[in-house]
View: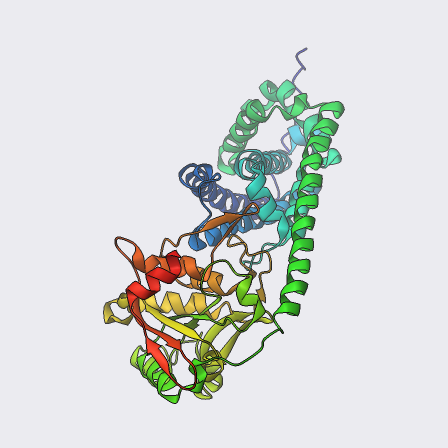
Length: 475
């Protein structure tokens, strides 16, 4: 039934302070909305061209993983800023569309601004966040908290609780019922200078799409139940992974202490010297220690892998010595700690002598890393390498987590531009030292074998070839 238009007096002109406040909030709204529009395009593009194509066929690459968490964080940040604005506007608005709405132009504008803010938030939740969150894999990645990008599960939970809040939806639904019923009565009152028409269009268009005013208490409760049923299965799955990680970690730490001799290469001063004179910055070192029990638990031939950062002289030659990421580790590097490795007690720096307590060692190199044309590229590789220091060991062996890593994941994260071979084990994508080595046997390899040594009895050692390496990898 049509509602008769209300009469209003000439008190329609807002005070100067009211106009300043309205202008301020309009500016906040437009800046937030502009960010949302850019963000929605980025998310849609990433989802269509990347996420929707990643099913069981492959894992997210390190850069895709970083970008995924970056976008989710931006969605939450955009909504947090919008929420602050919505709270301020709600106090000043006339949600009942009463006398003040019709008689005071700034109240009318503030009310429309509040409603448009709420509708855009709901749009983002329904059509930007939800398509990603509804995917089981990505939802569990978001909720697990296993990322080094600052995305916290608690922030995600606060976000979706807001949009399932019954009081909020009911308040907005009641407003929209009145808005859609009375809109013909106040269209002529819209102030163009205050963006009223633009806000009106946002509210009207969004409501036709979202149909919030048709939401009933039963529908809302069913939606919440359906949502949290998924959440319960996720909690169970994530909990099971955490238990597996703890058991795996306890077992790994126990058997890792079992060793019955020292490494044969370490006994040869000549072999140690050859390694030291061969190594160049960002070389990959892969080793075998058959005298340690954990070596038999890792699939493939090699049991451990690490990254060589370089000496002070080598880093100066690359113009990396005074880089902000390197500077905090000057003392360690000058004391010989030039090997970056992920051990059971975390990612840390070690000396070459400590690392060479092994029977076999292969040095792999990406040739372009030594070219002056790759200066910016080297900087990014070092950035990614150094930021791994201090991370815990990933006893889940999952390349799609970034807050914990194993030794081969360190190389996977650092050399982010190489399409490494991965394997799926127990529902997660993993990478082993052998997977890294296999790159040198590809048709167009991105890394080369530089040196391959095998220690023998006494202080003897043998220099082996690429064919020898291929035999042990493929056996």
